[in-house]
Image: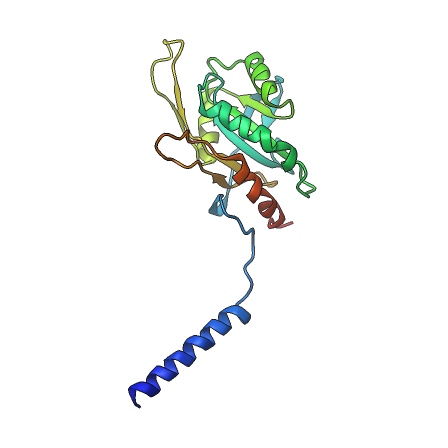
Length: 215
């Protein structure tokens, strides 16, 4: 076989492969998203019990039959927390319009129970949206719950200092109606820019995530 014949055969094979990929390959399934970092497999959450800004218990049962956007932080946070909650507030009306029989809720988890009392959480979360949920608990409950979501937090200095800061993840976690963590919206980290999950990116992806969920 000459080199020309071999080249022709290779070209024909390439063309046939391209045609097969378009017309024969099975269609893609699942949500077609642009911004969320989806986990390869949904993560089950352990049982937990937190206390909401209304003084009520928040358990895994409150996550079931809902889509939940969860953010971890604290009310004394000087920048990332209020900015992220403002982003979520801005898109919340549009999120409520996404067709689904599983209501979407926004949950703020305070990892600073030492300062974030029920009263303070109530005042703080209502500043952003009265429909949002804020909750906290002692660290023995908080830490495994936050870790199970793929998030983290740590005290950066002694709590003897009344103005201590808390390091925490700045992503927004997505929990499906089966109370499983399916992924998170990560902020872009760039010099001179606050690392905040952008509301518009969340809004762009959530319809596809909800529509692509298994019934």
